[in-house]
Length: 207
Length: 86
Image (tube, rainbow over all chains, first blue to last red; front, side, top):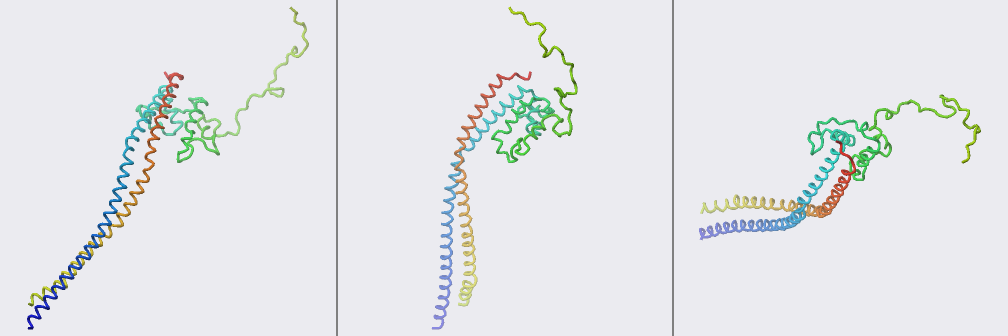
C-alpha cells in the first residue's frame, strides 16, 4: 500500500509542477501577445503617417529642382547683363560695394572675376547709380535678412551710404574750405560800372 | 522512485523559475517597445502635418517663374537701353 501512495505522491507533484509551468507559459505568452498586438497597432499608425509623408513630399524634389533651375537662370541672366553693361572690373566693384567681401567669391559664370581687384565703387559711379544700386539692397525682400536691413539704418541711415564716397566728408572734419562769398559783403569786390542804373544817354530810335 | 522525486524537485526549483524568468524578460521587452512605437506614431503624425505646406511649393514655383520672367524682360529692356561696357 505504501509504494502505491508513494507513486501517487510523486505523480501528483510531477503533475503539479507541469501545471505550474504551463500556467506560467500561458500567462506570460498571452501577455506578450497583447503587447505585440499593441505594437502592431502602433506600427500601423506609423505606416499610415509615413505614407502621408511620402505622398506629400513626393513632388517636393521636382518642384524645388525647377525653382532652383529658374533662379539659376535668373542669376545667370543678371550676372551676364551686369558684366556686359558695366564691364568685369566695375561689375565686381559694384557687387563688392553692396555686399562687402563678395568680390572674393566672384561671379558664378565668370570664374576669372574672383581674381579681379574690386575698385572703390564710390569713385566709379555717380550718386544716382549708387542710389539705384542701394534700392536693390533695401527692397522689401531684404527685410528677411536676420542682420536687419543690409544698408539702411533707421537711426543712422546716411552713414553707410556716406561710406561709399571718397574719404573727405565722412569723417566729419571740423573745418572745410569755405564756399565763395558773393554779395555786397563779399571779400572780393568788383568795380561798379557807372552806366548801370543810370538814365540812358540815347533813347532807342523808333522804327 | 528516488530519481522521480529528484526530477520533481528539479522541475519545481530549477525549471519553473527559469521559465518564469525568461518569460518575464520577454514580456518586459515587449512592454518597453510599446511607448517607443507610440512616440514614433506621434512624431510621424506631426511630420505629416508639417508637410501640409508642401503643396504651397507649387504656388512658389509659379511665383518664381513669373518673377524670373519679369526679370528677364526687365534685363532685356536694360540691354537695349544701356550701352555695353565696350
